[in-house]
Image 1 (cartoon, helix red, strand yellow):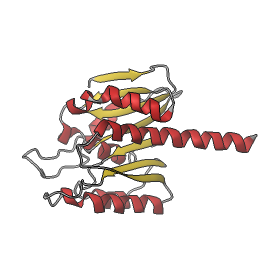
Image 2 (cartoon, helix red, strand yellow; image 1 turned 60 degrees about the horizontal axis):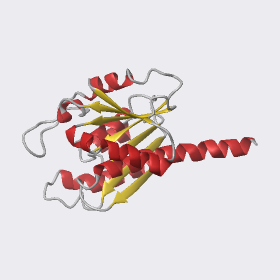
Image 3 (spheres, one colour; image 1 turned 60 degrees about the vertical axis):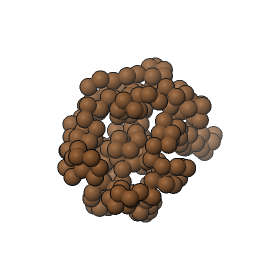
Image 4 (tube, one colour; image 1 turned 180 degrees about the horizontal axis):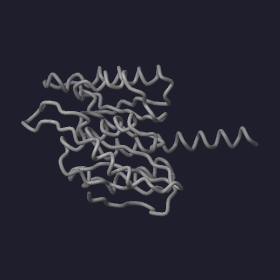
Length: 220
């Protein structure tokens, strides 16, 4: 597993993001935007994914575009990522874009290691995922969801369900008293993914800061 590091390696906050070549092209702009939006020092680990559809899929599913089926490599990917989260003095957040966002959300049902999940334009259309959410116990209490306002306007019948799926999943999380938000961005799936991902991580960081400030004020 190849990992690229950005930001301050001594920061108390570590952001972990599965990436492909397209993500890497915008990762420095993303890190800059996270810093601008949150004002907090972070250390971002970009984990290069070898096979996107295999390594980030929680279970097998047929291809919905092209001929590349979805594998079931998410468990192995998560195990490798958790090996990067061994420092107990650090706070870890997991997030990503598209299928990496879905993987991050799935990971929140497998472990309580992450303080928050940044799911920017997640592939919520993934077969059976919303049902999985409703039948499982989430182990993370801070979830950010977003979607482009044109993402559900596609001729692909499976992918067109993404809007209803994310609304359904978000409503379920709220029913479970999870601290979460659903933000609608302008445009389709491929518009400014680095900015959308930065907004996702920054929301989590700002929410955590607000909680810490509130606790400090209450204890004063």
